[in-house]
Amino acid sequence: MPFLELFRTATFRLAFTYVCLFAASVILLLGFIYWRTAGFMLRQSDETVKAEIVGLAEQYRRRGIEGLRQIVTERSARASLSLYLLAGADGAPIAGNVSAWPKGVGPAIQTVIYFDYERQTESGKETRPGRAILIVLPNNYQLLVGRDIKQVNEAEGTIRNTLLYALGLTALFGVIGGAYISRNVMRRLELINRTSAEIMSGDLTRRIPVRGNRDELDHLAGNLNAMLDQIERLMMGMREVADNIAHDLRTPLNRLRNKLEGVLIGGSASREETIGALEGAIGEADGLIATFNSLLLIAEAETGAHRDTLEIVDLRDIVNDITDLYEPVAEERGVRLKVSAPTSVIVRGNRSLLARAAANLVENALKFTPEGGEVSVTAGNPRDEAPYFSVCDTGPGIPEEDRERVLDRFVRLERSRNTPGSGLGLSLVAAVARMHDARVKLDDNEPGLAAKLIFPRPIETAQPMPAITQPLRHALPGPVAGQ
Image: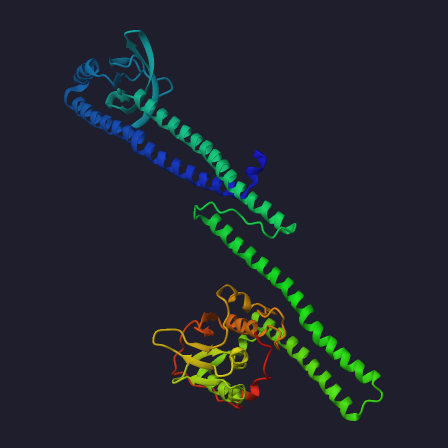
C-alpha cells in the first residue's frame, strides 16, 4: 500500500484522534504546571513587595522623607533582586538602585507595572526587566518598590518552550505511530482481502493465516476460517447431494417410466395386470414424493420455519407412541423392541418434528438390526443434566470416521445402495436437532449404534402440559427414507 494511502485509513484516523486527545491533555498538564510555577513565583514576589511597601510607608509616617531616604538607600545597597526608587513630585530620583523613573509611568496608587531598567554589572550596564508596585506618598513623593523578574521570565520561557516542544513531539510521534500502526494493521487486512479474492476466484482451500497473537485480528481470522470451512463443507455437500439425487432418483424414475410404458404398449394385458402396474407406478411416485417432502422438511427445520410452533413437549409420550407404532414391525422382523421412559422428560419443541426425528431413529435401528437383535428406546432427564432421547440397536453400527458424514443429506454407507431408503433419515434428525438447539451424538453400542438426541437445558416439569387433541401416530406421515 502506498504510504500516503495510510493517512486515509480508519486505523490512522483512530490513532490521530487519540494523539489529538493526548496532546490536549499534555497542554492542560503543562499549562497547570506553568500556572503553579511561574504564576506562583510572580505572586510570591508581589506579596513580598507589598509587605515592603507597608513597612516603608510606616517609616515615612514616623520619620518623614529623610528617614525614608536613608532606609531606601540602605536597602538598595544590599539588595540583589529588589528594586527601589524614591522620587519627588517631578519624578527626579532621590534614592534607590533604579537610576531613572520608568518611561510612560505616571503617578498612581497601588499600581503594578512592568518596566525595563539599567543595572551596572561587571561587564557594564545591562538592561533588565522589572515588576514593581507604585504608590504616591503625601506631598506627592513617589515610591516604587519591585523585583527583578529576569529569572522569572526565563523560567516562563523555559516552560513555554517545553510546552511547544512537548506538543510538537507528541504530534510527530503520534503521526509516526499512527502510520506504523496503520501499516501493520493494513498488512493483515490486505492479506485477508487477498485471500478473500483468491477464494472468490474459486480456490476454496485458501485460508487466512493466524499469527497466534490472540488479538482481535486473530479472532477475526479464526471466525472467517471457520466460516470458510463451513462454506466448503456446504459446497461439497451440495455436490454430493446433486450426485446422490441423480443416482437415487434415476432408478425409481426409470422403474416408473418402464411400468407406465409397459401398460401403454401392453394392449393385451388383463385388467388385473394393468391395475397392478399402475399401483406399482403410484408406489414409485409416492416414494419420490416422500423423498422431496423430506428434503423440504429438512430445509424448513434448518431455516427455523417452525420456531414459532414450539411448545412444551413430554418426550416420554413420544417414546411410548413411537414404540406402539413400530412394535408390530419389530415383531415381524424378529427384533425385540424395549422402551425405558420412567418419568416425564419435558422439553420445548415442535411435537410433530420431534416425533418424526424419533420415528426415523427407530426405523433406522429396526432396518439394520438383524433377526434376534434388540432395539431399546430411552428418554431420560438425569438430575442436573440435560434431557435426552436415545435409540440403541445391536446392528452393524457406523464406523467412527463416518459418524459425522452420515448426518449429511443422501449419505449412505452401503455402496450398492440396494437397501430401501435415500439417506435422508439422519439428515432430518440433525436438522430437527439444530432447530431445537440440541445435538445428535452417535456412539458405539458394542455392538450396534447408540443414537442420542441431547437437548440444551432442562425445563421445569411444573409447567402445565398442553392437551393432546389427537394420537401421535396420526401426526406421523409414515416412515421416511432411512440411513
